[in-house]
Length: 79
Image 1 (cartoon, rainbow, N blue to C red):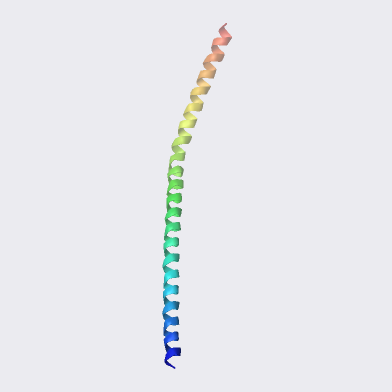
Image 2: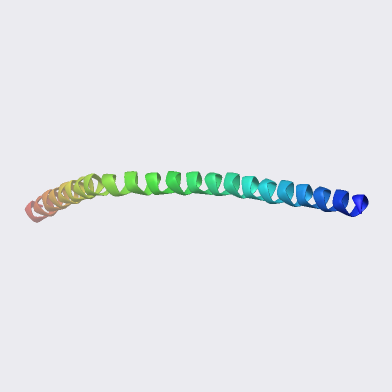
């Protein structure tokens, strides 16, 4: 009877240690993955914030290119 009780208690302790160990490992992995996801979202947010500025710069560059093309066309007309 004592042997069975001892085995039961040891099984209970082993089960508890295994369960809590699994929970801790799972929690660490979840924390790590959440941190990686937050970094990814942060990078995307920064990109989204810069997009209007980049679009403005692109429009300004396109306008300068059109102006230069117009100047070249006008010079060719006078030749």
